[in-house]
Amino acid sequence: MLAEQQFTTSEICVLMPLLEAYPYYCPYEVLLASFTSGRVTDTTIARCRKRLQEAQEAGVWDQEMRPVRNVLSRTRLKTRTFGIEISSILETGYILMYMPERKQADG
Image (cartoon, rainbow, N blue to C red; front, side, top):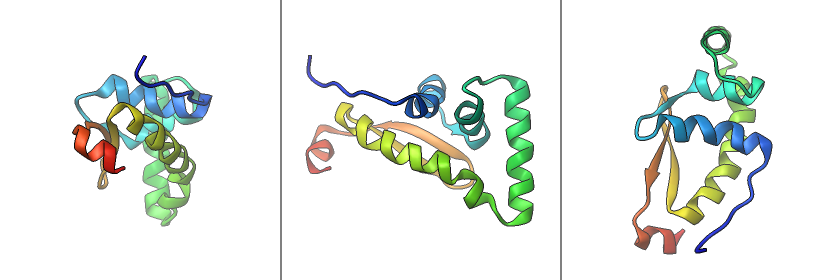
């Protein structure tokens, strides 16, 4: 075994949709749906998409996504052990990216 990490339930809830979307990005509403309900269905995604649109209109989008971003931050530290970076795509979502070994040693 080369590396091991233990993820909390919240961390798994944001990591699984990212892994399932790989090599593509995972939209914000999918991450929020998984984080808030633990299940990603068309209904929960639609509900979260509406929730984020309303938050954007009210100017509180950052507050709405803050809990997800906090968990993603902790998850990001753990995935780096495996050479995987969680990168933000502005106004779109998040994506998993492979980090070359040289960068892993620097991080």
